[in-house]
Amino acid sequence: MSKTVLVTGASGYVGGRLVPALLKDGVSIRCLARTPAKLDVAPWRGDVEVVEGEVGGDLKSAMQGIDTAIYLVHSIGQGENWAADEQRDAKNFATAAQEAGVKRIIYLGGLGQDTDELSVHLLSRHRVGELLKESGAEVVEFRAGVIIGSGSASFEMLRYLVEVLPVMVTPRWVSTKCQPLSIQDVISYLVEAVLADDNIAGIYEIGGPDVVSYAEMMTLYADVAGLPRRRLITVPFLTPGLSSHWVGLVTPVPVPLARELVESLVNEVTVASSKAKETFQTTPMPLELAISRAVAATEENRVPTTFSDADLIHFARTATDPEWSGGTVLKDVRTMTTSASAADIYNAVISIGGHKGWYSGEILWRIRGLLDQLVGGPGLRRGRQEKLSIGEPLDFWRVEDMIVDRRFRLHAEMRMPGDAWLTWDIEEGAGGSTITQTALFRPHGLSGRLYWYSVAPFHGFVFPGMLKGIIADAKQSS
Image (cartoon, rainbow, N blue to C red; front, side, top):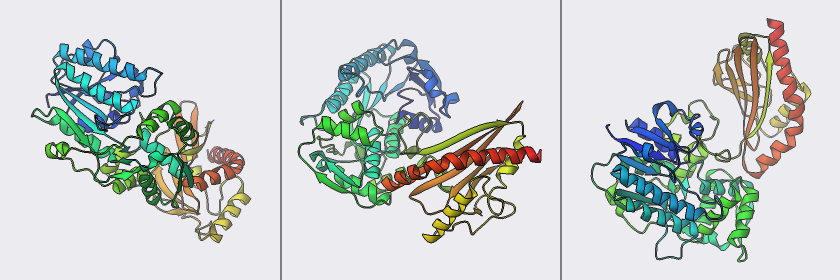
């Protein structure tokens, strides 16, 4: 394609997923970034042009030769005057687009009817759309509510609240209606808008097929995630300020951001217009399917082929997402350097388990195996094959990944409230080799978190000894 598209907010939740989708369709992309280094971790960094700058600053070089500009930035919760800053930046962007002759601006804003008494957040979102129209360009404004996918602040609030709290004291806004939309469908709408040949200027309200209350969405998340049904106790005295501090205690979402989002939850955010359905080909998926995919797209594969499905890519956490996205992942990471070769270390690692044992804390491993058998798990009785391959059992683990002389990963099949992995990554250098041992645990509900912290003291004894034993075995082999 000959189109050159400017993407703002490429390091954000939506932008980080939109860029690779556009690249797949052959779109030439230029990213505007306040801190270009943030994009260095993105796998698509080498396929795009990056220009340093801010939407509120000098945009001449960023706008030069641009056909379509995508506006995905916001300032929500960033300082006391964030709404005024957000609108000033939008006006500056519109002026620069007009001077550069940009033909189309695509903007992702927020749902909510202009006739309602909207929150500061939603009012500002709508005002930004109005200011962008002053550019004289063809402005395509999408208005969305809760977006389902790792990285969305609204969805992460939902995820952490439901997973951590079996019983919730909730404010009245949990009965407010909303129309959640999957991140995959958001990306689909945006890509369609970029590729459209006709003039499609206008406001498009987008949402999934299900209209639910926040309480119903919490219940559905618990069902999909396999958690016991959550009990919600609604009280009238929880103000948005109190609610945001409560959310801040339970979730990793920053309190200033949580406050603005919570204040917006008093507004009903549902689709009142069929214009998007009449204009675009995208057919949004049901809420249950969207949540299922967001829950499934975890940071670590549960089986080797689970996440090769392209439909799950948008739901998974990306390299540019904030650290608190993607759900809780608890880790024990230990690294050591040795003179042994990568091959010797790898051979020591893949010989673990079975009659040889686990190098450290053998009595603890045996006790854990017996306890697992008592609750119906495999325990340690399966042992191991002499020569391992992907998919084979190893005591109460299963081999999930093997890269000769580089990586060995096990996925736990013991009974526990969560998913666990044990991984060894090996890197050979000029003076020896470095081995990184990572125990990773994705807890399932509150019981999963309690489980991890109850066994953490034993980790402090077992894991260092295991790594030292592997290195000692590797040195002896060499």
